[in-house]
Length: 141
Image 1: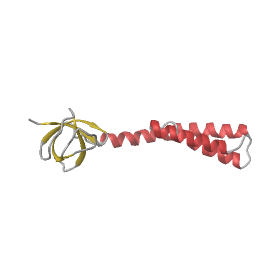
Image 2: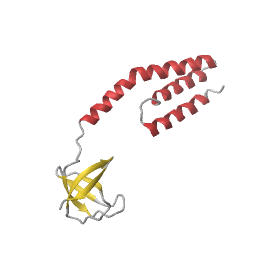
Image 3: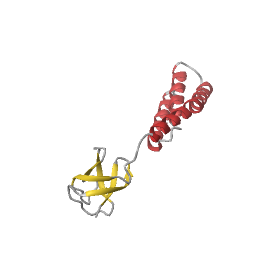
Image 4: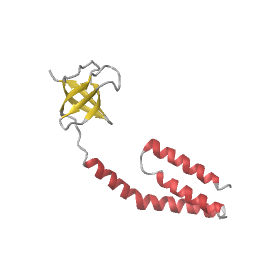
């Protein structure tokens, strides 16, 4: 078997990780690269498979807990603007991505109307939800 097959396996695992963001398949990328190197330097298929498995599972066991801990720290310090009031700084139309609001901490966010109704510039709104970097807002009457 060509050692380049391991690079294909590593690439597939990288794509799966990018899609899932689970921090599981990324470690198999490291195993695939290690197996490629073993094969490139002449190791037979059995050794390549063992290298792939050992490196992949060792990385999974050693580094995933650290990565998950680091990920949890980042999440715990982020505050959410849900429930806060904001001011519309760019009119919000019914179209996705068309509108911006500024929260009390002077951060501006892309915004959508919760009921898809247009909201004019200068209107006061309340943040009812957050979808990634976009806020879902409703007009304050």
